[in-house]
Amino acid sequence: FSEKITIPESKVLPAPYPEWAHSHWVWLSSSEANQTSETQFVEGFLSRNIPVGGVDIDSQWATGDNSFVWNTEKYPDPQGMIDNFHNLGVRVICWTTSLVDTDSPNYQEGLDNNYYLNTSRGDGHVGLVNWWHGTGAFIDYTNPDAVNWWHSQMDNVLDMGLDGWKCDGTDPYTFELYPIEAYSGQITERDYANMYYGDFFNYTRTKNPEALIMSRPVDSYYVLYWSFSPHYVMYSGWVGDQDPTFEGLQDALRNMFHSAWRNYTNYGSDIGGYRSGNRTKELFIRWSQLGAFCPLMENGGDGQHRPWMFDNTNQTLDIYRQFVDIHYELMPYFLNAGSTSMEEHIPVIYPQNERTILPPRDWAYILWTDILVNPIVENTTEVKVQFPAGNDWLDWWDTSIVYQGGETERLTYELESFPVFIRKGAALALQVTKDLNLNHGDEYSSDRLTVFIPWATESGKQVVRQFNDLSQELEYSYDKETRIFELTGTRHERSLIVVLHNIMEKPSSITDNVNELLVDEMVTIEEFRIANNVWRYDSETKSLWIRPNASTEGTFLTISNLVLP
Image (tube, rainbow, N blue to C red; front, side, top):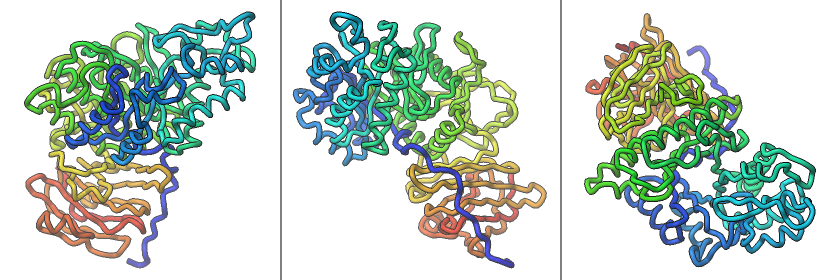
């Protein structure tokens, strides 16, 4: 080398929100929820080796709707409960709205001070609405004194270390007040929705910079698709309440598609459907699989949502665990997708159907840029997959299987599997912590970022972001004539492990151009797992594994004589 290679740091902005937005969230409906049951529910997942990143404390946790005072009959030690969840690595959010019910202990104080909407229409308070939890009034966000009063009550819970809120969709009830009279004058329903979700999001972040809210992007009433939240809060949304049926699953997907068509960022749906009913094993599994390939994977609602309770063979439990683990592997992919989506006002999910209010003819979507998901929306193992033109697609479960873009295939997926495909040429950033039988790595990969290239083409790239931390840009190129493969990565404290599938022969050499070293070949997997600056070729799986030196000065690898199919 004539001179030492210098690779700069990435200029890509850090993620604007924390990683736990893409973890696995669970919750119990209010009819079942209390401190004991919530704790047992979460620990039920953890004890079965299913990670949980968030728990939602559903409605009726307080002494009145939005009194922000814990009901100690249901939650005798809320501080202890929150601390316990935090010690388990689980964030805690509480259900809320901006309505104060007339039987809530704080209602009268707000009324006496004119802190609600429509308090100035003559005698009495006519700004009341009837909603599913009773009769209540909306806090007036245009009144500074009302907002200070509201925040002081929120502090009762936020000061315990709460991590956010589930802001339920009561804002359309303001239509019952039209014209909506506020302290500042007349406002619209859209004005009010923006203030409602925005205040819970923004104020809570002043107390906890890693806070999130869970709210609706788009929900539907028959063929009316309604936008609820402002876009900038949508880091961890859900698309409303559905029946526990395959028709309910389709309803959730339609809401997700309309959310995507309106450029919302991150959301999922209640796995198995929110409402009570005959929730079958087959439905629960197919919905779980869909949830794993959504930005937010969340499971809760009325009736049974415990994956260990659907059969006595552990089949449902094992499938559920597998797909939660897949979801966690994809966390770096989700985090960059969500960050870029928010910055550029584009969606994370790209439905393959044209925009319509009718049932779509194609339920598939592309998750960000590189993953094609074809949800199973009926109780069947047979699916028709229409592969998007312009790229070839690799089977998620066996990357040696290639499907041609523009073609249609009829494929079979038993309950253990699901139609997911990777764009040929993609470079995926993965958080691998265990062996999922996908040949991505195992527990020895957990201290590194995995750069997974299932089938290299002429070029590929990926950006990896972290919350309040340095980003990393990764890019590869491949010359078919010379069989030279090069991978570059910007500086980062985190080390890499590079995994390439569909490599037909052992390469002749690998060079670390930054450190001016040849990378050493390791024969056994045991040697490879504990060393740095090493590579290993697995002739049985046709895969190449590289553990380069630390990335603090950047990464620039050259693989000589790399043979692709």
